[in-house]
Amino acid sequence: MLALLAALVVLTVSAATGFRPLADAGNNDNLLRLVEVRDLLNGQGWFDLHQYRMGPEGGFVMHWSRLVDVPIATLIMAAYALTGSMPLAEAVAQVLWPALLLLATLFFTARAARNFAGGGAVLPSVVIGAAAYNFVGIYWPAALDHHNVQLMLTMASLALLLEAPAQRTAALFSGLCAALTLAVGMETLPYVATLGVCVSLLYVVDGAGERAIARDFGLGFAGVSTLVFAATIPASAWGEAQCDAFSTAQFVVAAIAGAGLSAIASVDVASRDWLRRLLCLGLLAIVLGAVVMAFFPQCLAAPYATLDPRLKELWLDHIEEAQSLVTLITHDPRRVAARYGTSFLALALMALRLGRGGWRRQDSLVGALLVASFLVGVWQVRGTTFSIAFALIPLSAWIAKWRARAATNSSVGVALRLAAVWLVSVNPVWTGAAAATSLALEGSASPADEGTADKACENKASFASLGRIPGTTVLATSNLGSPILAFTAHRVFAGPYHRNIAGNLLALDAFLGSADDARRIVHAHGVGLVAVCPGSPESVLLARKAPGGFLAGLINGSIPDWLEPVAETRGSMIELYRVRHAG
Image 1: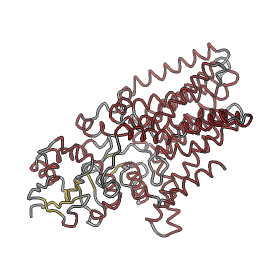
Image 2: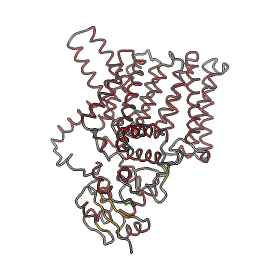
Image 3: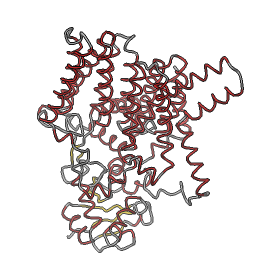
Image 4: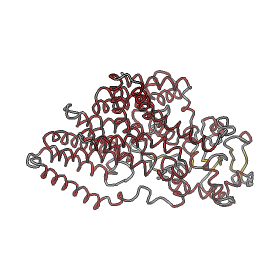
């Protein structure tokens, strides 16, 4: 009930502001997910993950899972049956889907906090959880990307493992959730691996108490991995290993790991003492390592090892969520407190708990996930979404402890400490403190026109003129790719996705080269329109990279004779140019 109340409060606040994220064109992943769902509803095959309207002719294959498309498509069809309007049905789904996931995530967070620190931690976990999840933004309206699904499933897996000693089927469902979150996307691989290692080590230490948990977790993990593989991978692709999406490689490793753990825990001889358990699990780890080295060695390379150097320089190095902690400290220190403050505080609380002794099973599970997610966050800021979530559990326990003290001690000192504990546990407080400190050190800044002009072309309204033009191929920068697909009938070359190498390089060659180079590319690929957002950070970056290039020339008003400006877009956020083809 608390989780439901908190989710309704968040939804009400969002409604009071007019569901503003629905008009947002700045999140490429949310928009492309909507496009992918539309394609599925319009008859594109279940196993066909091509994005035909992005990339070179024929498109490219996306690495996302259909598992996320299904519930969104179901919501859209249900809303369409009730309203008779597809745009309204999509808007309903864009609001309801993130709200339902927020409710589920808050529910599992509260259950995890209760199993970690007792009933007194439930209310704090919901309050600071609602604030934290709203801060990270993955539960806002229009948030159709899969990160919210992954966080919900990972939190569910943790909560179920925490209560597994008292609930017979909890470990089985925990393994199920772990398999599903991995199937949705490889971003959660570190957390799924951490959960698996924790279950295994707890089984080594406490064979009697953890044997059934290890057996059921492994069975659920292997079983659901098998079902997902059969349901989402066509038989024609069973021999292909993809390192960035659930495929034969992930299935084989998951099946061996889960079935192996379950088998070891089911055999009395292997479970007789801690040394036998350790040796059997060590042998399982060796088998897993040998399988990966023999059959999938390419998956041991860095995630973007094969990315073209130009794309790394002009795209990957400028993705906000891919920045490291060191980069943030150097270039954007305000975000450090906002993204790492509560996680660091939770790590300190766990370290104090370890130093005082009495380390518990719950501490091992929560502490391991918190450390793993914090380390991922040090590498890439996107990992802080999970570390912020896992930090809620020890922070809720901390608040619960001080609430209990305040209930028996009415002194002003205890009340002030309780207030301070509440404040520092609320993630947005760190954001406000960092912003206030920055203003105090740098002086007051009053950015002109901020909020009145969509210079970065991140609003749906900026694409209205483009949407009124009949569908053709549009040459545009990568961050305009997903909005163009979502709001118009056109197709594009570029989009911010690592598999779209050919399309992104094609756009870079056109924009960074001369006007003659661009003309050859445009005519060779049947481009009908060129779209330019002069104020977007990507356009500014490319213009600086090639000040004599085609894009820089357009921004500066140098229009080649083979282009014709679209009059109604002169001076607009997105300026359009028709291509004059021979004849």
